[in-house]
Image (cartoon, rainbow, N blue to C red; front, side, top):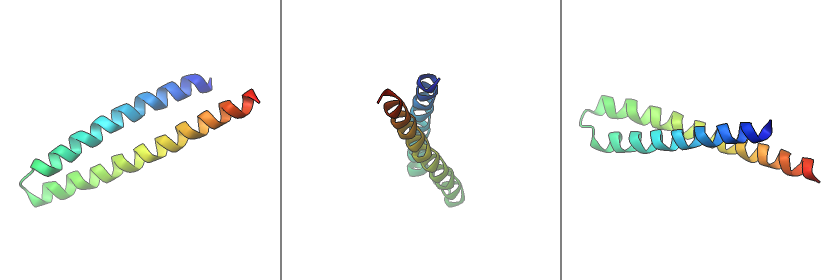
Length: 69
């Protein structure tokens, strides 16, 4: 069960990293300040979500390691 959860978190992290890179590119290219602010806000949200997924992945790995002992 945890293995499948870890796999899904990994897939989510990859998708979030792609979104993060795309938003960073968009923020650096956009000319309209209002739109740049909106993109930057979304970039912050994606970055926060990515950090949370990394914590979850770490917790799932730790839980698996604890169960093996």
